[in-house]
Image (cartoon, rainbow over all chains, first blue to last red; front, side, top):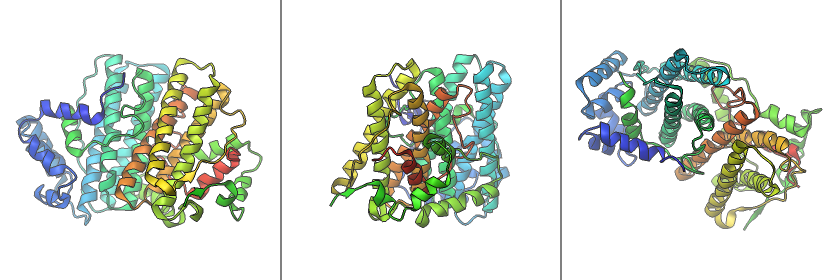
Length: 238
Length: 231
Protein backbone atom coordinates (compact mmCIF):
# COMPACT_ATOMS: atom_id res chain seq x y z
CA UNK A 1 0.00 0.00 0.00
CA UNK A 2 1.54 3.30 -0.98
CA UNK A 3 1.70 6.35 1.24
CA UNK A 4 -0.50 9.33 0.40
CA UNK A 5 1.20 11.82 -1.85
CA UNK A 6 3.27 14.46 -0.15
CA UNK A 7 0.94 17.18 -1.34
CA UNK A 8 -2.06 15.39 0.03
CA UNK A 9 -0.60 14.73 3.42
CA UNK A 10 0.94 18.14 3.85
CA UNK A 11 -2.27 19.85 2.75
CA UNK A 12 -4.11 17.88 5.38
CA UNK A 13 -1.55 18.92 7.94
CA UNK A 14 -2.09 22.46 6.77
CA UNK A 15 -5.85 22.25 7.22
CA UNK A 16 -5.48 21.11 10.77
CA UNK A 17 -2.77 23.36 12.04
CA UNK A 18 -3.41 26.58 10.16
CA UNK A 19 -6.49 28.67 10.70
CA UNK A 20 -8.50 30.97 8.47
CA UNK A 21 -5.67 33.05 7.00
CA UNK A 22 -4.20 29.90 5.44
CA UNK A 23 -6.59 30.45 2.58
CA UNK A 24 -4.98 33.82 1.95
CA UNK A 25 -1.53 32.29 2.02
CA UNK A 26 -2.58 29.57 -0.36
CA UNK A 27 -3.96 32.08 -2.78
CA UNK A 28 -0.93 34.27 -2.51
CA UNK A 29 1.66 31.65 -3.16
CA UNK A 30 0.06 29.43 -5.74
CA UNK A 31 1.57 29.58 -9.19
CA UNK A 32 -0.92 31.78 -10.96
CA UNK A 33 -0.36 34.77 -8.70
CA UNK A 34 2.29 37.33 -9.47
CA UNK A 35 5.11 36.18 -7.23
CA UNK A 36 6.93 39.48 -7.32
CA UNK A 37 3.83 41.33 -6.21
CA UNK A 38 3.47 38.90 -3.37
CA UNK A 39 7.07 39.31 -2.33
CA UNK A 40 6.66 43.08 -2.34
CA UNK A 41 3.72 42.66 -0.02
CA UNK A 42 5.90 40.49 2.17
CA UNK A 43 7.79 43.64 2.99
CA UNK A 44 11.10 43.05 1.32
CA UNK A 45 12.54 41.71 -1.87
CA UNK A 46 12.33 38.26 -0.57
CA UNK A 47 14.79 37.56 2.19
CA UNK A 48 14.19 35.66 5.38
CA UNK A 49 11.06 37.66 6.10
CA UNK A 50 9.18 35.21 3.91
CA UNK A 51 9.11 32.61 6.62
CA UNK A 52 7.83 35.09 9.18
CA UNK A 53 5.32 36.47 6.74
CA UNK A 54 3.84 33.09 6.00
CA UNK A 55 3.65 32.24 9.68
CA UNK A 56 2.16 35.59 10.59
CA UNK A 57 -0.39 35.28 7.84
CA UNK A 58 -1.27 31.84 9.11
CA UNK A 59 -2.47 33.40 12.35
CA UNK A 60 -0.21 31.09 14.31
CA UNK A 61 0.20 31.31 18.04
CA UNK A 62 1.96 34.41 19.30
CA UNK A 63 4.83 32.30 20.56
CA UNK A 64 5.70 30.75 17.24
CA UNK A 65 5.14 33.86 15.19
CA UNK A 66 7.21 36.05 17.46
CA UNK A 67 10.13 33.65 17.28
CA UNK A 68 9.88 33.60 13.54
CA UNK A 69 9.47 37.36 13.45
CA UNK A 70 12.63 37.70 15.46
CA UNK A 71 14.37 35.48 13.02
CA UNK A 72 13.02 37.59 10.22
CA UNK A 73 14.01 40.81 11.91
CA UNK A 74 17.57 39.71 12.36
CA UNK A 75 17.67 38.75 8.73
CA UNK A 76 16.40 42.22 7.81
CA UNK A 77 16.05 43.14 4.19
CA UNK A 78 17.93 41.86 1.24
CA UNK A 79 19.78 44.00 -1.19
CA UNK A 80 19.90 41.41 -3.91
CA UNK A 81 18.40 42.33 -7.24
CA UNK A 82 16.74 38.96 -7.90
CA UNK A 83 14.47 38.92 -4.86
CA UNK A 84 12.53 35.97 -6.19
CA UNK A 85 15.47 33.60 -6.31
CA UNK A 86 16.77 34.89 -2.99
CA UNK A 87 13.43 34.15 -1.36
CA UNK A 88 13.59 30.63 -2.73
CA UNK A 89 17.16 30.16 -1.53
CA UNK A 90 16.18 31.33 1.95
CA UNK A 91 13.19 29.03 1.89
CA UNK A 92 15.48 26.14 0.98
CA UNK A 93 17.95 27.28 3.65
CA UNK A 94 15.19 27.24 6.27
CA UNK A 95 14.31 23.67 5.34
CA UNK A 96 17.94 22.60 5.36
CA UNK A 97 18.42 24.14 8.81
CA UNK A 98 15.46 22.10 10.01
CA UNK A 99 16.83 18.90 8.52
CA UNK A 100 20.24 19.56 10.02
CA UNK A 101 18.70 20.14 13.47
CA UNK A 102 16.67 16.98 13.07
CA UNK A 103 19.69 14.83 12.27
CA UNK A 104 21.76 16.41 15.04
CA UNK A 105 19.09 15.41 17.54
CA UNK A 106 18.69 11.97 16.02
CA UNK A 107 22.42 11.32 16.03
CA UNK A 108 22.68 12.49 19.63
CA UNK A 109 19.79 10.29 20.72
CA UNK A 110 21.71 7.04 20.63
CA UNK A 111 18.65 5.30 19.21
CA UNK A 112 20.59 3.74 16.37
CA UNK A 113 23.81 1.85 15.99
CA UNK A 114 25.94 0.27 13.31
CA UNK A 115 25.19 0.88 9.65
CA UNK A 116 21.94 2.79 10.19
CA UNK A 117 23.58 5.16 12.66
CA UNK A 118 26.42 5.73 10.24
CA UNK A 119 24.00 6.35 7.41
CA UNK A 120 22.02 8.91 9.42
CA UNK A 121 25.26 10.65 10.39
CA UNK A 122 26.18 10.89 6.72
CA UNK A 123 22.80 12.37 5.86
CA UNK A 124 23.13 14.91 8.65
CA UNK A 125 26.53 15.91 7.37
CA UNK A 126 25.15 16.37 3.89
CA UNK A 127 22.31 18.56 5.15
CA UNK A 128 24.84 20.67 7.01
CA UNK A 129 26.79 21.07 3.77
CA UNK A 130 23.58 22.16 2.06
CA UNK A 131 23.08 24.79 4.78
CA UNK A 132 26.58 26.13 4.27
CA UNK A 133 26.22 26.18 0.51
CA UNK A 134 22.83 27.92 0.51
CA UNK A 135 23.89 30.43 3.16
CA UNK A 136 27.01 31.20 1.19
CA UNK A 137 25.05 31.56 -2.02
CA UNK A 138 22.62 34.04 -0.47
CA UNK A 139 25.52 36.06 0.93
CA UNK A 140 27.41 35.95 -2.34
CA UNK A 141 24.32 37.35 -4.07
CA UNK A 142 24.18 40.22 -1.58
CA UNK A 143 21.22 38.89 0.38
CA UNK A 144 20.73 38.21 4.06
CA UNK A 145 20.45 34.53 4.91
CA UNK A 146 17.48 33.23 6.84
CA UNK A 147 18.24 32.57 10.47
CA UNK A 148 18.30 29.07 11.87
CA UNK A 149 14.75 28.46 13.08
CA UNK A 150 16.04 25.93 15.63
CA UNK A 151 13.55 23.21 14.88
CA UNK A 152 12.06 20.97 17.52
CA UNK A 153 11.37 17.35 16.70
CA UNK A 154 9.83 14.55 18.71
CA UNK A 155 12.54 11.93 19.29
CA UNK A 156 10.81 9.05 21.05
CA UNK A 157 11.95 5.73 19.65
CA UNK A 158 13.80 4.28 16.69
CA UNK A 159 10.71 3.39 14.65
CA UNK A 160 9.03 6.76 15.18
CA UNK A 161 12.18 8.68 14.32
CA UNK A 162 12.77 6.65 11.18
CA UNK A 163 9.22 7.36 10.06
CA UNK A 164 9.75 11.04 10.79
CA UNK A 165 12.97 11.02 8.79
CA UNK A 166 11.03 9.53 5.88
CA UNK A 167 8.45 12.33 6.08
CA UNK A 168 11.02 15.09 6.47
CA UNK A 169 13.17 13.97 3.53
CA UNK A 170 10.17 13.40 1.24
CA UNK A 171 8.96 16.88 2.16
CA UNK A 172 12.37 18.37 1.38
CA UNK A 173 12.51 16.71 -2.01
CA UNK A 174 8.96 17.80 -2.86
CA UNK A 175 9.71 21.35 -1.69
CA UNK A 176 12.65 21.71 -4.08
CA UNK A 177 10.58 20.22 -6.86
CA UNK A 178 7.90 22.78 -6.12
CA UNK A 179 10.32 25.63 -6.75
CA UNK A 180 12.26 24.33 -9.73
CA UNK A 181 10.06 26.08 -12.27
CA UNK A 182 10.15 29.36 -10.30
CA UNK A 183 13.89 29.84 -10.17
CA UNK A 184 15.13 32.45 -12.64
CA UNK A 185 18.89 32.08 -12.50
CA UNK A 186 20.38 29.02 -14.23
CA UNK A 187 23.18 28.80 -11.69
CA UNK A 188 20.74 28.83 -8.77
CA UNK A 189 18.54 26.30 -10.52
CA UNK A 190 21.58 24.08 -11.01
CA UNK A 191 22.34 24.41 -7.29
CA UNK A 192 18.75 23.59 -6.36
CA UNK A 193 18.68 20.55 -8.63
CA UNK A 194 22.02 19.30 -7.36
CA UNK A 195 20.69 19.44 -3.79
CA UNK A 196 17.19 18.18 -4.47
CA UNK A 197 18.29 14.89 -5.99
CA UNK A 198 20.30 14.20 -2.84
CA UNK A 199 17.20 14.83 -0.71
CA UNK A 200 15.36 12.34 -2.92
CA UNK A 201 18.20 9.87 -2.39
CA UNK A 202 17.90 10.29 1.36
CA UNK A 203 14.13 9.82 1.22
CA UNK A 204 14.24 6.67 -0.86
CA UNK A 205 16.99 4.99 1.11
CA UNK A 206 15.17 5.70 4.38
CA UNK A 207 12.08 4.26 2.69
CA UNK A 208 14.02 1.04 2.18
CA UNK A 209 14.90 0.96 5.87
CA UNK A 210 11.37 1.65 7.11
CA UNK A 211 9.77 -0.52 4.41
CA UNK A 212 7.74 2.29 2.94
CA UNK A 213 7.25 3.27 -0.68
CA UNK A 214 10.45 4.20 -2.52
CA UNK A 215 8.36 6.44 -4.75
CA UNK A 216 5.34 7.68 -2.79
CA UNK A 217 4.14 9.63 -5.83
CA UNK A 218 4.69 6.84 -8.33
CA UNK A 219 6.74 7.28 -11.50
CA UNK A 220 6.56 11.07 -11.47
CA UNK A 221 7.42 12.97 -8.29
CA UNK A 222 4.89 15.58 -7.26
CA UNK A 223 5.94 19.10 -6.28
CA UNK A 224 4.75 20.59 -3.03
CA UNK A 225 3.89 24.27 -2.95
CA UNK A 226 5.64 26.63 -0.57
CA UNK A 227 2.44 27.15 1.40
CA UNK A 228 1.92 23.46 1.91
CA UNK A 229 5.49 22.92 2.98
CA UNK A 230 5.42 25.85 5.40
CA UNK A 231 2.22 24.46 6.90
CA UNK A 232 3.80 21.02 7.19
CA UNK A 233 6.91 22.28 9.00
CA UNK A 234 5.03 24.55 11.36
CA UNK A 235 4.91 21.89 14.13
CA UNK A 236 8.70 21.76 14.04
CA UNK A 237 9.31 25.48 14.42
CA UNK A 238 10.21 26.57 17.91
CA UNK B 1 9.10 12.12 -39.38
CA UNK B 2 10.55 9.75 -36.84
CA UNK B 3 14.09 9.76 -35.59
CA UNK B 4 15.92 6.50 -35.58
CA UNK B 5 18.71 6.46 -33.08
CA UNK B 6 21.68 4.30 -33.71
CA UNK B 7 25.09 4.47 -32.13
CA UNK B 8 26.95 5.55 -35.26
CA UNK B 9 24.52 8.39 -35.75
CA UNK B 10 25.15 9.45 -32.18
CA UNK B 11 28.87 9.22 -32.68
CA UNK B 12 29.28 10.35 -36.26
CA UNK B 13 32.86 11.51 -35.93
CA UNK B 14 33.96 8.82 -33.56
CA UNK B 15 34.50 11.39 -30.84
CA UNK B 16 32.40 9.50 -28.36
CA UNK B 17 34.13 6.22 -29.02
CA UNK B 18 37.42 8.03 -28.54
CA UNK B 19 36.25 9.42 -25.24
CA UNK B 20 35.16 5.97 -24.16
CA UNK B 21 38.45 4.43 -25.25
CA UNK B 22 40.34 7.12 -23.37
CA UNK B 23 39.29 5.42 -20.21
CA UNK B 24 41.04 2.31 -21.41
CA UNK B 25 41.80 -0.74 -19.42
CA UNK B 26 38.43 -0.61 -17.69
CA UNK B 27 35.67 -3.02 -18.15
CA UNK B 28 32.55 -1.38 -19.48
CA UNK B 29 30.92 -1.44 -16.08
CA UNK B 30 33.82 0.03 -14.19
CA UNK B 31 34.09 2.79 -16.78
CA UNK B 32 30.50 3.68 -16.17
CA UNK B 33 30.98 3.44 -12.45
CA UNK B 34 33.90 5.83 -12.56
CA UNK B 35 31.88 8.19 -14.71
CA UNK B 36 29.20 8.13 -12.05
CA UNK B 37 31.33 8.92 -9.07
CA UNK B 38 32.58 12.40 -8.44
CA UNK B 39 34.17 14.24 -5.57
CA UNK B 40 31.64 15.19 -2.96
CA UNK B 41 33.68 17.64 -0.95
CA UNK B 42 31.95 20.15 1.27
CA UNK B 43 32.19 23.63 -0.06
CA UNK B 44 31.14 27.21 0.59
CA UNK B 45 28.31 28.82 -1.30
CA UNK B 46 30.64 30.85 -3.47
CA UNK B 47 32.70 27.85 -4.31
CA UNK B 48 29.55 25.91 -5.02
CA UNK B 49 28.34 28.49 -7.50
CA UNK B 50 31.71 28.53 -9.20
CA UNK B 51 31.79 24.78 -9.28
CA UNK B 52 28.30 24.42 -10.60
CA UNK B 53 28.27 27.40 -12.92
CA UNK B 54 30.72 25.92 -15.41
CA UNK B 55 28.75 22.68 -15.43
CA UNK B 56 25.53 24.61 -15.59
CA UNK B 57 26.86 26.61 -18.47
CA UNK B 58 28.34 23.46 -19.90
CA UNK B 59 24.90 21.95 -19.58
CA UNK B 60 23.43 24.68 -21.74
CA UNK B 61 24.54 25.09 -25.35
CA UNK B 62 27.67 23.00 -25.21
CA UNK B 63 26.10 20.11 -23.30
CA UNK B 64 23.14 19.44 -25.56
CA UNK B 65 22.50 16.13 -27.27
CA UNK B 66 23.64 15.91 -30.89
CA UNK B 67 21.37 17.18 -33.66
CA UNK B 68 20.46 13.65 -34.70
CA UNK B 69 18.06 13.55 -31.75
CA UNK B 70 16.19 16.57 -33.06
CA UNK B 71 16.14 20.28 -32.40
CA UNK B 72 15.56 22.11 -29.12
CA UNK B 73 13.26 20.46 -26.62
CA UNK B 74 12.48 17.65 -29.06
CA UNK B 75 16.15 16.73 -29.15
CA UNK B 76 16.41 16.72 -25.37
CA UNK B 77 13.25 14.67 -24.94
CA UNK B 78 14.44 12.17 -27.53
CA UNK B 79 17.77 11.91 -25.75
CA UNK B 80 15.88 11.27 -22.50
CA UNK B 81 13.62 8.80 -24.28
CA UNK B 82 16.62 6.87 -25.57
CA UNK B 83 17.97 6.50 -22.06
CA UNK B 84 14.53 5.51 -20.78
CA UNK B 85 14.19 2.93 -23.57
CA UNK B 86 17.46 1.47 -22.40
CA UNK B 87 16.46 1.36 -18.74
CA UNK B 88 12.99 -0.01 -19.49
CA UNK B 89 14.36 -2.74 -21.75
CA UNK B 90 17.00 -3.61 -19.18
CA UNK B 91 14.43 -3.98 -16.44
CA UNK B 92 11.84 -5.71 -18.63
CA UNK B 93 14.53 -8.26 -19.45
CA UNK B 94 15.46 -8.60 -15.82
CA UNK B 95 11.83 -9.16 -14.88
CA UNK B 96 11.38 -11.76 -17.60
CA UNK B 97 14.51 -13.55 -16.44
CA UNK B 98 12.73 -14.30 -13.16
CA UNK B 99 15.95 -14.23 -11.18
CA UNK B 100 16.11 -15.35 -7.61
CA UNK B 101 16.28 -12.01 -5.82
CA UNK B 102 15.87 -11.11 -2.17
CA UNK B 103 12.69 -9.31 -1.13
CA UNK B 104 14.12 -5.79 -1.26
CA UNK B 105 15.78 -6.27 -4.63
CA UNK B 106 12.63 -7.83 -5.99
CA UNK B 107 10.61 -4.85 -4.74
CA UNK B 108 13.16 -2.51 -6.31
CA UNK B 109 12.84 -4.31 -9.65
CA UNK B 110 9.05 -4.00 -9.56
CA UNK B 111 9.23 -0.28 -8.91
CA UNK B 112 11.84 0.54 -11.52
CA UNK B 113 10.18 -1.61 -14.17
CA UNK B 114 6.94 0.28 -13.59
CA UNK B 115 8.63 3.67 -13.51
CA UNK B 116 10.90 3.42 -16.53
CA UNK B 117 8.11 2.04 -18.68
CA UNK B 118 5.93 4.93 -17.51
CA UNK B 119 8.71 7.38 -18.43
CA UNK B 120 8.99 5.84 -21.90
CA UNK B 121 5.24 6.09 -22.38
CA UNK B 122 5.18 9.70 -21.21
CA UNK B 123 8.00 10.85 -23.45
CA UNK B 124 6.67 8.95 -26.48
CA UNK B 125 3.26 10.50 -25.96
CA UNK B 126 4.63 14.02 -25.81
CA UNK B 127 6.96 13.57 -28.75
CA UNK B 128 4.25 12.02 -30.90
CA UNK B 129 5.46 11.53 -34.45
CA UNK B 130 8.83 13.01 -33.51
CA UNK B 131 9.57 10.26 -31.00
CA UNK B 132 12.79 8.34 -31.51
CA UNK B 133 12.40 4.67 -32.32
CA UNK B 134 13.54 2.22 -29.71
CA UNK B 135 17.12 1.10 -30.38
CA UNK B 136 18.04 -2.56 -30.46
CA UNK B 137 19.61 -3.72 -27.25
CA UNK B 138 21.78 -6.60 -26.22
CA UNK B 139 22.47 -6.61 -22.51
CA UNK B 140 24.85 -9.53 -22.82
CA UNK B 141 23.60 -11.21 -19.66
CA UNK B 142 23.91 -8.08 -17.54
CA UNK B 143 20.24 -8.28 -16.55
CA UNK B 144 19.93 -12.00 -16.02
CA UNK B 145 22.24 -12.69 -13.12
CA UNK B 146 21.47 -11.01 -9.80
CA UNK B 147 24.87 -9.58 -8.95
CA UNK B 148 25.53 -8.12 -12.39
CA UNK B 149 21.97 -6.90 -12.59
CA UNK B 150 22.26 -5.00 -9.34
CA UNK B 151 25.59 -3.42 -10.20
CA UNK B 152 24.48 -2.45 -13.69
CA UNK B 153 21.20 -1.01 -12.41
CA UNK B 154 23.11 1.25 -10.06
CA UNK B 155 25.25 2.56 -12.86
CA UNK B 156 22.31 3.08 -15.20
CA UNK B 157 20.28 4.97 -12.62
CA UNK B 158 23.12 7.26 -11.63
CA UNK B 159 23.79 7.89 -15.30
CA UNK B 160 20.13 8.91 -15.61
CA UNK B 161 20.55 11.39 -12.75
CA UNK B 162 23.60 12.92 -14.44
CA UNK B 163 21.78 13.03 -17.78
CA UNK B 164 18.57 14.70 -16.60
CA UNK B 165 20.49 17.11 -14.38
CA UNK B 166 22.57 18.06 -17.36
CA UNK B 167 19.64 18.86 -19.60
CA UNK B 168 17.09 20.36 -17.22
CA UNK B 169 18.55 23.83 -17.77
CA UNK B 170 18.42 23.42 -21.55
CA UNK B 171 14.72 22.72 -21.82
CA UNK B 172 12.68 25.78 -22.77
CA UNK B 173 9.08 24.60 -22.46
CA UNK B 174 8.11 25.08 -18.78
CA UNK B 175 5.91 21.98 -18.69
CA UNK B 176 8.83 19.88 -19.94
CA UNK B 177 11.20 21.38 -17.39
CA UNK B 178 8.77 20.36 -14.69
CA UNK B 179 8.41 16.89 -16.18
CA UNK B 180 12.16 16.46 -16.51
CA UNK B 181 12.79 17.46 -12.91
CA UNK B 182 9.95 15.23 -11.75
CA UNK B 183 11.55 12.28 -13.55
CA UNK B 184 15.02 13.27 -12.35
CA UNK B 185 13.83 12.92 -8.76
CA UNK B 186 12.65 9.41 -9.46
CA UNK B 187 15.95 8.36 -11.04
CA UNK B 188 17.73 9.66 -7.96
CA UNK B 189 15.43 7.60 -5.75
CA UNK B 190 16.09 4.50 -7.80
CA UNK B 191 19.83 5.11 -7.73
CA UNK B 192 19.94 5.55 -3.98
CA UNK B 193 17.97 2.39 -3.24
CA UNK B 194 20.02 0.11 -5.47
CA UNK B 195 23.10 1.85 -4.11
CA UNK B 196 22.02 0.93 -0.58
CA UNK B 197 21.18 -2.63 -1.59
CA UNK B 198 24.58 -3.00 -3.23
CA UNK B 199 26.49 -1.38 -0.39
CA UNK B 200 24.60 -1.79 2.92
CA UNK B 201 26.86 0.59 4.81
CA UNK B 202 25.25 3.33 2.72
CA UNK B 203 28.28 4.73 0.93
CA UNK B 204 26.63 4.37 -2.48
CA UNK B 205 23.38 6.13 -1.62
CA UNK B 206 24.79 9.43 -2.81
CA UNK B 207 27.99 8.58 -4.68
CA UNK B 208 28.64 12.21 -5.54
CA UNK B 209 28.22 13.33 -1.95
CA UNK B 210 25.97 16.24 -0.94
CA UNK B 211 25.55 17.59 -4.49
CA UNK B 212 24.68 15.60 -7.57
CA UNK B 213 26.47 16.63 -10.75
CA UNK B 214 25.10 17.33 -14.23
CA UNK B 215 26.79 15.71 -17.22
CA UNK B 216 26.83 16.90 -20.78
CA UNK B 217 25.04 14.70 -23.28
CA UNK B 218 28.40 13.84 -24.83
CA UNK B 219 29.68 12.44 -21.57
CA UNK B 220 26.52 10.41 -20.96
CA UNK B 221 26.42 9.09 -24.49
CA UNK B 222 30.07 8.12 -24.31
CA UNK B 223 29.32 6.10 -21.20
CA UNK B 224 26.28 4.49 -22.79
CA UNK B 225 28.22 3.67 -25.94
CA UNK B 226 30.93 2.08 -23.85
CA UNK B 227 28.47 -0.43 -22.40
CA UNK B 228 27.85 -1.89 -25.81
CA UNK B 229 24.20 -2.38 -24.87
CA UNK B 230 22.91 -0.52 -27.95
CA UNK B 231 23.55 -2.71 -30.96
